[in-house]
Length: 155
Image (cartoon, rainbow, N blue to C red):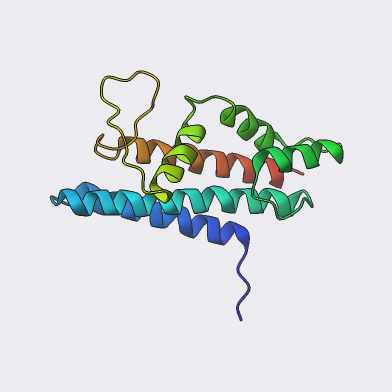
């Protein structure tokens, strides 16, 4: 069996999300766009988990996929993990891209109908916005992954 690094898997998930969103943008079929965006959302959440696995491996933390637990574990080891601090801060803000990504994934997972974000000022977007929210999640998550890798390579 071939061993694949967490970074490689995270990259594959980000790339899959990017490709799915590109397909959604080029499709004229509303049902297909919805399916492709849902699949992209799954890939984005998987990439988020991949980032957490990379962080856990880099800082010798448990295999937990919970930001708060990993941040507490790092604090107990007296390790400063900037990406976990940033994620912990983002998760505490209901209007952040990260909180919106996790919420959108949970809604999709539980088969809840997504309410239109038009006319609401408390959401970044949650469907019906021509993929803009998914593209934002992809961009922000990719930036965070790259910053984490750059910071961890300095040490």
